[in-house]
Image 1 (cartoon, one colour):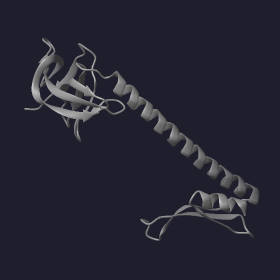
Image 2 (spheres, one colour):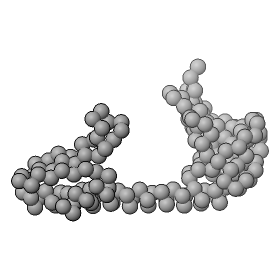
Image 3 (spheres, helix red, strand yellow):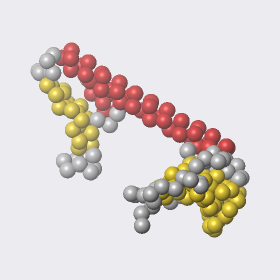
Image 4 (cartoon, helix red, strand yellow):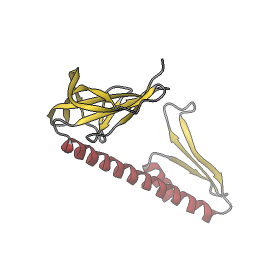
Length: 181
């Protein structure tokens, strides 16, 4: 059957009962306990309904492949756009924490292609914004407090480490910060 060959070309094993409208589809897998994963095992009301389901299944696989490729192209374009837009002097802010909100700010000291040299900068508390164990802070440009380090520019910002992800910050924008005693 032609439909079985289509499934085989996608990496599936399709078994169709010639007497009853029953279809079993498995995908070989080394990690599965039985050596394969069952995609579906259905009894249909008619052969027409079964054939329609099989065609729809293949069409869904094709749509998923196309969407994955489009996302890949969009991520690559966003990465290139981000790399082109970053320049020396830009400020990136990372807001992170568990049960508290830490804020770290970094300034681009040097740009080399898709990489930047960053240096941590100080944060200034905004007068009158203090609350119970919280305040609002604004990054202070050229007020360096840390050592230089090199990172790559990703699609939206810069991964500082496993916890912190820095995004571009607009000049004068303030950020919420909280802490516990």
